Amino acid sequence: MRYGWIPAIILLTLSSLALVWAAGEIRIEEWAVHTPRSLPHDTAVAPDGALWYTGIESNTIGTLDPATGQIKEYHLKIANSGPHGLVIDKEGNIWFTANYKGYIGKLEPQTGAITEFRMPDPSARDPHSIVFDKKGAIWFTVQDGNFIGRLDPPSRRITLIQLPAPHSRPYGIAVNSQGIPFFCEFGKNRLGSIDPATLKITEYLLPKDSRPRRLAITSDDLVYFTDFTRGYLGRFDIRNGKVEEWPSPGGRGSKPYGIAATPDGTIWYSESGLNPNTIVRFDPKILSFKTWQVPSGGKVIRNMAVTPKGDLFFASSGANKVGIVSVE
Image 1 (cartoon, rainbow, N blue to C red):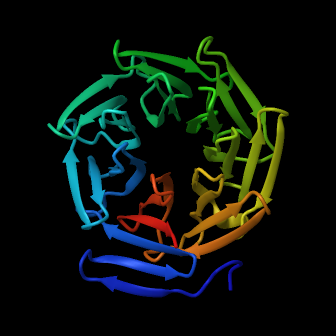
Image 2 (image 1 turned 45 degrees about the vertical axis):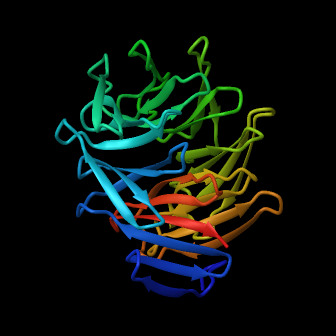
């Protein structure tokens, strides 16, 4: 028996046609997305609580109403755009990275109108993860192009900042309470940050062979990251430069991936290398882990987002589903 695993009961609810996994402390519910082989990728939660996801292989942006199980999809104008990263502004507009076509898009849900913001440099061909800062600027990573980017929506201006070392592969990105973007360098054993005023990049060394993929920042500005290659959960404290890490319950091959921090500082993440994938909870107060299996198997959970209730919204890419983890 895997550490922390709790036997569960699987129920098929006819009202929503959703698979439910009731496992004591949590409840996991998943819904199939409309288009087959969509590979739902990133998730985001709108200010009104609406749940959104990207369908990278179906060229769609989708939204789920968990009360009814209804899913609505918006098809993008540019074929094979590869919608990847996802973020939502205060007005409810949906912003996404077109990972296959080199642009950032804006979807207005009420009208279905889509606006494209093209990369100014053709080598920035694969915008990846995306986040807003408190001033309304959009920050994003360009993995293969090796850039950190900033988009100013009112002026439409995009600024690209090259990383110091080639093949750094900037990946997950998040902004702390001071408005400083932090990002993972998936190709190196480093985290990075960028000064919003000067655009200077600072890098932070991690243990040898670390490959940080996604990160989440708590309200006290601790940076947690998933070490995909070594099977660790890591924590970086910008105040003293200290890096701490803990082996993930699933072991070296567990491939920790999608991660989120709830308002109380609890860390949740997925182990994408296990079959079925798991949802893992880490309590930083007592340094303990607990693990639950994903009912569909997950087949690589790449990202997750926190809802206003403190639940988790995630995408099971290979299973072609989106789901919610509710704390009972």
